[in-house]
Length: 344
Ligand code: 13P
Image (cartoon, rainbow, N blue to C red; front, side, top):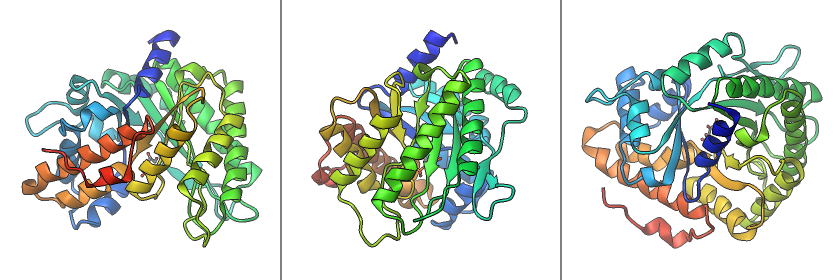
């Protein structure tokens, strides 16, 4: 794809009313999710669960793209249709997580660096042939009330994000740049605001230095939110306003869209926060959308719990979640909509 086509693809991924499903859990992360509903982590169970999500026809109108894991991109439906082909047939763009996870950072007690740059150019070329049109790389930024993150951790993670993003565009795909400031810990909203702003400044500086085209990328940030253990939790509107304030300061208007991660927030709260941003800040230069993992899947996973008899019910739960997040794209979500049902 040319630079123009990459920019068009980035725009398509943040088209109004739709957002991204992050279904790119690594084998060890999906283990945690499956074991929470007592399902063994076998290749077939992983495949069956992803088939449930990708064949939920009522969700597809609200889903612009799906991020897959390497194994999943190579899997197919029980009837033998490759997942990438199945998604593309529903006008849902297949994407791929290309990082190899966050590992301990040398000479650091707690911080992490994301690996996966070696051989990335060759892996990207293969992913294009398998049908992927966008990619994701997640950097994990540890935060505490006083010291973390270090400049060291921010610099090396931003450098890696930019190297990844440049290679992805060179390969003709859209990079989703994900610097996730964690919501673990007891820090307050203001601390999250300061650290998120510092992180995004460094990331965009690295992206510019490494010649990444802002028009052909998406940013996947955390929302600005107090740590999960902080006694004072901000209101939905306060989170929305603080998040948009930080983004306005740091994200160039040339970036077509911002697709939030949910990061451990509940399903309803993730939707409410996105909705408030879109309802209260209609004049921002980018699309404000979602790229949720847990916040799109948690209830559906529970409803399924590994039983073929529950597939239709789980798909209905997932389709409702997708529809509510689709409504949050235009600020038209209301909490009462949580009680609605989607016919399977
Ligand atoms: P969560 O929405 O569950 O945080 O997952 C999004 C994601 O892709 C993290 O890399």
